[in-house]
Image (cartoon, rainbow, N blue to C red; front, side, top):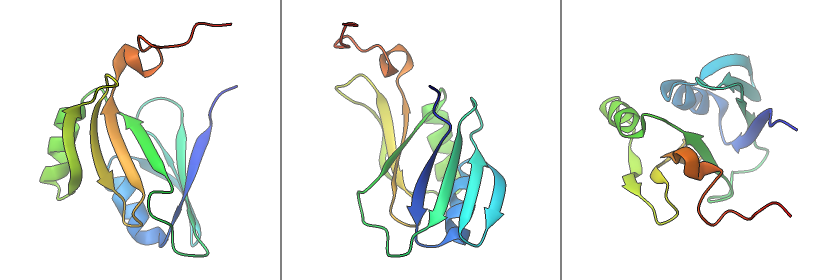
Length: 126
């Protein structure tokens, strides 16, 4: 099984599209209620859909792994993106930065390397 895409709800399509394009995702589908992007690395896609009601805060956290996390955050900050957390090393062995999209969805830009799927506490196959 291979993950194809993740779709998140947004309060308005246009500002969300501008936000994610500014973060480096490539827009491939656009309608008044839906947008789909290709991620700049790998084969996954990412979608937005217009929510019928306001998006609840903290309902979704979106994780994008970045090999160049610190440089990417610096570039985004230079473009005017405001982060709620600058890159820092976490106890679960990931380096993370946090930002919110225009609808309040939390985004974690992170680098985990080998620890993404193989942390020291990973369960052994049973």
